[in-house]
Amino acid sequence: MDVAALRGVEYADVRVLAQRSRALTTKNGKVGSASDAESVGMNVRVLADGAWGFAASAELGRGAVEATAARAVEIARSSARVKRENVRLAPEKPVVAEWTTPFKIDPFTVSVEQNIKLLLKIDEELRAVNGITLAETNLNFNRDEQWFLSSEGADIHQTKLSTGAGYAAYAFAGNEIQKRSYPNSYGGQWQNKGYELIDELKLVENARRIAEEAVALHKADQCPEGTFDVILDSSQLGLQIHESVGHPIELDRVLGMEVNFAGTSFLTLDKLRTLRYGSDLMNVVADARQEHGPGLGTFGFDDEGVPAQCTPIITNGLFTGYLSSRETAHAIGENRSGGTLRAEAWNRLPMIRMTNISLLPGKKPLSLEQLIAATDHGILMETNRSWSIDDKRYNFQFGCEIGWEIKNGKRARMLKNPSYSGITTEFWNALDAICSREEWTLWGTPNCGKGQPQQVIGTGHGASPSRFWGIKVGSAFKAL
Image 1 (cartoon, rainbow, N blue to C red):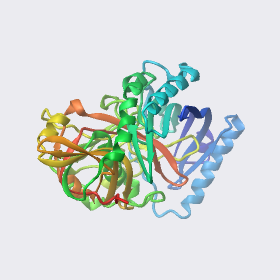
Image 2 (image 1 turned 90 degrees about the horizontal axis):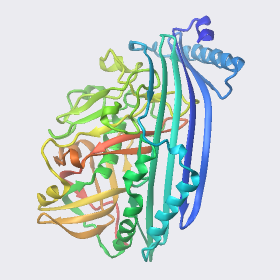
Image 3 (image 1 turned 60 degrees about the vertical axis):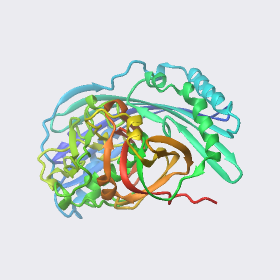
Image 4 (image 1 turned 180 degrees about the horizontal axis):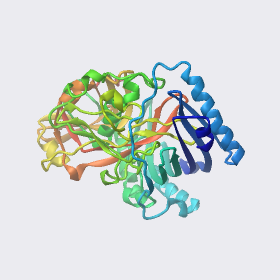
C-alpha cells in the first residue's frame, strides 16, 4: 500500500490468502482420487485515475510484493484511458476485526485413513443392493485464512472452514441409467462447519435406502406430461432459487459489467420495487450473517472489508433488492454496499457473488406430509438431476432424480425422470404453500461458476418444501 500511495492512487487494498483443501473420492470399492493441497499468495487492488488495477503474486518477498503493487497501479492507469466513467466507491467505515467459522472438530485433524475408511463403508452399503452397478462417494474439506488491509484503515483477519460430503448410486439396465444421490446431488451437502457435519448427515445409515430407490426407478412409471400441481423438496428448491433468483439479482450482471460466463439478467433496474416476482408467500433474503446459519455464503466480511449483511431480495412477492458492491451501490440509489464482493482465490479479482440466498419458511406450522395430505392431485419431485436456463435467467427446465404421484392426499406410484419447466416470474407467482421452519434446510452449492477466467465459489440456499400450482411437467425426458 505504501508503494501504491507513493504513486498517487485514490484507494488501495491488499489480500493475503492461505488456502488448504482436501478432496477424497471412491468408486466401486476403490479410492478414486485423493488430494491435499495448499496455496498461498497475495494481491493488490488499486483505484487510480478513476479506474481499477489488479495484480497478484505467489511470491511474498518484499521485492515481489512491491513489484506487484507497482503493476496494479500501471494497469489502473492503462485502464483509465478507456474508461467510460470514474469508479465511485460507496463509503464504508473501516474496521479492525477477527472472525472465524464456528466449528467443533477441525476436519484436518481427522486422518486421511479414517476419511477413506468411512467412504469405503458407504460404498460397501451401496453396492450391497442388487442392481447397483456404480457407487461413488466424496468427502471435501476447505480452509481459507485471509488478511485484508485497505488504505482507508481496514485490518481484518478472517478464517473460513467448510465441510462437504455425499454419494450417488447408479443402476444401469438395458439402455437406461437411473441415479439416486444423498444428501443431495452434485457433491452432496456442504456447510461452513467442521467434521461434526459428517456425523449429522448420517451417511452410512441412509446408503441402502438410496441404492434401493435407484434400482426401483427402473420399474417405476415414466413421469406423465401435462399440467400438475408440483411439490419440490427443499434441495431441488435450493437449486431453483440459485438459478432463477440468485444469478439474476447480481448487480454486475444486470449492469452488463460481468456477462462472460452466463449472460445478463431480466431484472433490469426499472423492475426494482415494481416487479411482482412471486406470490405474497415469497420472501427471499441474501444473508451472509452467522445467525442465518452455516451456509457456504456465510462470512464475517466480504473481500473489500464490508461486514456481512441481510438484504431483503423479495418481500411478500415484490422484488426489493440486488446483490451489490461498493462500486455498484450508487446504481440502485444505495449509499452502502450490500457486502457481496468475493473472490475464489488470491489470484482472482473479487466480483459480486451470491451469499446465502434463501426462501424464508412459511409462518404457519406445515410439514411435508401435511402438505402432501392437502394436495388432491400432484407430483412430488426430489433431488436435482439436470437444469437448463436461458442467459437472462427467465425460461428454465429442470429434471429431478425421483418423483411421486400424489392422489387424494397420499403418495401413490413412484415416477422416474420427472421434470418441469416454466418462466421465472410465472413460476414463483404460482407458489401457494411453504412448509415451516422445522422442514427448512440451508443447502450448500460448492460449484457456482462465474466470470472469465472462471471463478468457482460456494453459495448457500435455504428452503422448505413448497407447492406450486399449475406447472408444466414432463417435457425434459421422453420415454425411449
